[in-house]
Image 1 (spheres, rainbow, N blue to C red):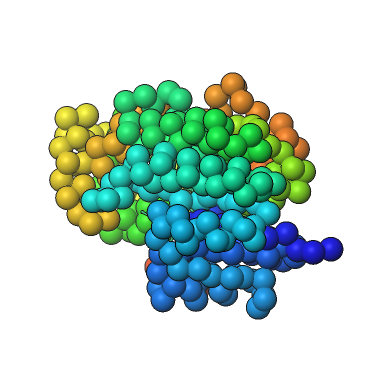
Image 2: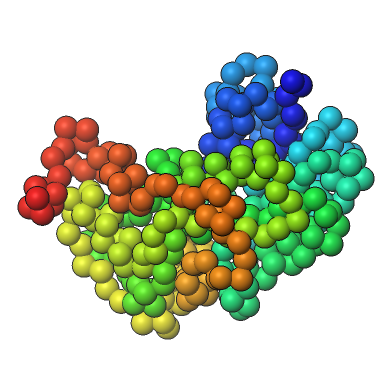
Length: 321
Ligand SMILES: NC(=O)c1ccc[n+]([C@@H]2O[C@H](COP(=O)([O-])OP(=O)(O)OC[C@H]3O[C@@H](n4cnc5c(N)ncnc54)[C@H](OP(=O)(O)O)[C@@H]3O)[C@@H](O)[C@H]2O)c1
């Protein structure tokens, strides 16, 4: 069987790396587009066997260069997304304009499938620029290419994420930690491997023209996430509820940094629960249930944030047993 060629945008990111491993192991050829082959080439190249991965350096808006890649592709997968705006990298450009260009090219070159990663909870968060532009991007895709599948994941975690790993670093260093909206916001975290299984299932089962919400097996609040991480890294920290004006002020300050810890838009998003809506099918409904539980998975790599590293003993666990 001739290996299908998947054209991937954003393949060097957290989800992309896991996806490249899954696809190449299963005899799919991947072409990965990156903005900087010198910085990201080795990360992408080492995710699969030689011969299965082709890397192209390009500006994602260079249509002449990108068009050529569509001539060879069977499936296009878009994993590009941003959490904050910086100069030309506006939410509108990345979340709306770019997916719209890809959908039109998928149609022009008769691709078999377009898979796009959006985000959970964006229907409700009408006052967030991130959410609004993701919704507009979805509309553009559905309007321009009927063989599209939109996946809306809750927060995604794994050993190489920017979420649990950053939080464990901060919890290690800070004596007190802020809780926004009293830490009541709910999430259904999904492990990267479970999400990648969903994407693989969507490809192999040829599931198109659908919005699918991708969630993990449990619902946990922001405060519970922090408590679980503190338990796992053996630390006791004061979790302090930040009043909204103070939270806004801190976000205003943080967003001055090149890679902000928190922006005003992210604070707005945190107001809304990040759980399945009941209005769309989920990964469970399409026969691809998430199997990884948050605490059990993070336990496999949290020792790196404990005193003593791999030789550490979790005192909290000893107490609770
Ligand atoms: N991770 C999560 O918790 C989560 C939750 C919900 C939804 N999502 C969505 O899932 C998708 C993939 O997430 P991810 O966490 O794997 O993403 P990621 O690691 O943050 O980024 C993916 C890749 O996108 C490319 N990229 C980033 N900014 C860009 C820009 N301004 N212009 C062009 N390319 C850019 C980068 O590739 P190069 O540097 O190689 O060009 C980057 O490696 C995104 O759309 C995200 O919004 C993620």
